[in-house]
Image (cartoon, rainbow, N blue to C red; front, side):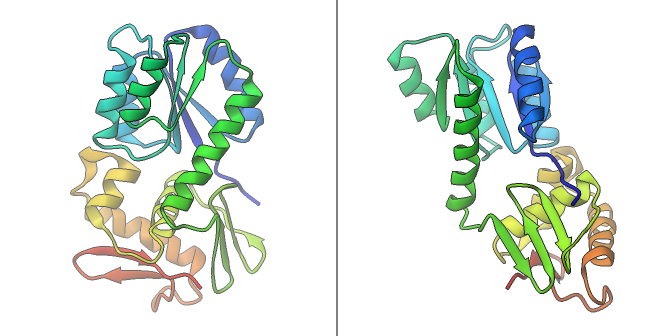
Length: 230
């Protein structure tokens, strides 16, 4: 099956951290996305939200806790703090600001990956979303990022998968045009509804038994879309 790797954004100004984490994340089935400053990291989160963020507290342009607070204004995915600071108050403040975990440097990559997996599973549980969602002969594995139909892999572009995942994660609730555009294409594209319609059309061609009368990717006229699962 064709897997779309979960994107993990690492915000850290230490090149050695990226050289160390990039192959480990790739080997574990993730896509490593690099940012060396808080500003760059926040821009990446806004433009195409990753599945999770690993954030260093000691950044050159902004304190990591401030970056965490800013990110939480528009990002609800897991944020793990990675820092050489071992003061307990730093951990408490970071957790209070919305971090889901705190890993001290130096660290074992196996422990970091385990905590990352736990954080991503917990987010799905909090959203009430099952890791594997089925609708007729369609199966969407949100952990492995795999999509199949009648047991055969469905090849989706990264954008198509991100759009489908956002609808599946909503658990049958309507997701508005603006929410989908902001989460998949970034806040600058929230008015591009026609662009969204084109991508929904692509998904229907690949997933629906009859794209003209969709059973799973349902249009809520003038509002948005929802995914109907079993």
